[in-house]
Each structure stands twice: as structure tokens, then as C-alpha cells.
Image (cartoon, rainbow, N blue to C red; front, top):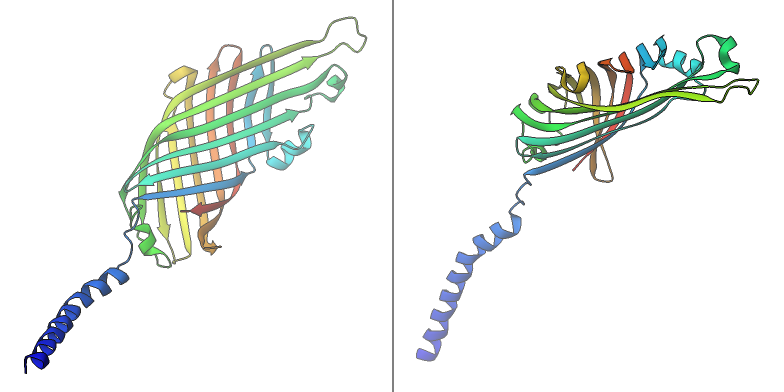
Amino acid sequence: MKPVIMPFKFSVAALLAALALAPSAHATETKEPTASHWGFNLTAYMWLPGVKGNFSAGPFSRSVDASFIDINNQSRRFPLGFMGRAEVHYDRFGFFVDGNYMSLRLKPLIPKLENISSGLDHELGLMDYGLMYRIFGPTADEIPGWQGKKRPNRLDVYAGARTLWLDNSVTLTDPRGLIPQREFSASKSYTSPIIGGRFVVDFTPEIFMLVDGNVGGFGAQDVTFTGGVMGVVGYRLAALGVPLSVQAGYQAVRFELDKGVLQTKSTMNGPLLGLTGYW
């Protein structure tokens, strides 16, 4: 009888062991991966601002109050610009860099002066960067769980700096060739603190609205004031497995410098279109 009983006992023990291990193995196979604490997004956008303000270089100055279309008509070439924003998030904390570059070549205010001056060249570089903190709303590791769903409202506050680079120049020539060509130019960069916040609300799982506002300057490095406001409506979608959103809205930026040979008080405002990828 032993040759029969022993294999039976061994088979029962093996079966019980297999049943005991099976749930554990199944749980291991079906367990969802833990969401990353990190989140990244990259935005490329096009901003078409009008300009209202005064620009000066030495004894020469130019006042501008025009829409983007007017500026294009007054410019010796199509205004150039490069814009983008990058954000890195870890749970409720984040870091952002938002950069703009624009180049305007304005015709002389008086057409009769075109034979002695090509006009005023104005270049602007604007970069915001700093740290963010999410007051309420899903964090970076919670966001993947809200894909395809209407998300709770989000509020981020941030503090950082705005670096402003300006270059204004005027070139004068003597059509008779008796006086050497002269150029008046002023170029300088300024860095001042900014504080602000941005609020996002979802109307549907796909449609959302974002509002951002900031102020800064406070007299640091001759920047008496700088501030900005932006409002966009966005739509979420996906391409090649990457979550995306397209945005359309309006943005305005104000900056005031009033010291030395370079003086600028200007407001830039106009429509904005953007595309954001999320990882």
C-alpha cells in the first residue's frame, strides 16, 4: 500500500502548494505599474502681438501704437519671433522656462527721411523662469489616472525671474557721402523678480481653460514694472500615443524701463496659438 499512498500524499501537497502560490503569481502579473512622480510638458506657440509704447536709442525715439498687421506694414520685413515653454513637475513642485524672441525693423516715421536712415531696429528677448507649487489639483503622479476624464480644478503659484534683453539701433547715412555713416545703438539686459499664478478649469474631459497672471520688476535693475496676463481655451487629444493639447487665446506683456540712453515703455498684446505635448 505504501507505494500507492506516498504518491497520493505528495500529489495533494503539490496541489495545495500550487493553489497557494497561484494567487500571488497572478497578482504579480496583473499589478499595474506605479505612476511616476515626474511629469514633463513642452509647448511651442505663436504669438502675434501688437505694440503700444515708446522706444528710444540716444537722442532718437519712436512711438508705436499698432496692431500686428500694422506693424507688419510699417516694418521693412515680416516681424520675426521664436517662442516656447518647458515645464518639469515632481509631485506638487515644478520648474518652468518660457522664452520669447522678437525682431522689428520699423521704417522711418517721416518717409522723406528714408534717404538718410533706414529706420529703427528693435529686438526683444524675454525669458521667464522659476519654481511652481500646486496649491490644489492632481499632482504629476496622479495626472495619468485622469486621462479621458474631467479633471479637478488646478491652481499653481510661482516665483522666479524675468530676463529682458533689448536692443534699439538707428543708422544714419549722408546721401552725398560727405559725412561718415553713424550708428546710434543701445543694448542691455535686465533681470527682475516676478510672482504669479495660473488657474486651470476643465469644462469637459477634452476642453479646458487656463488663466495666468504675473507682476514683477519692483525697481530691480532699472525695471520699474513688468507684468503679464494670458488666457487660453484648450482642447485635449492624442497622436502616436502622446497626449497633446491645442490652445488658442490672448496674451499681454507690459514692461517699463526708464534710465540711461535706453528707455522703453511698451505693452505687447495679441492672439496666441499653441501646441503642448505631455509625458
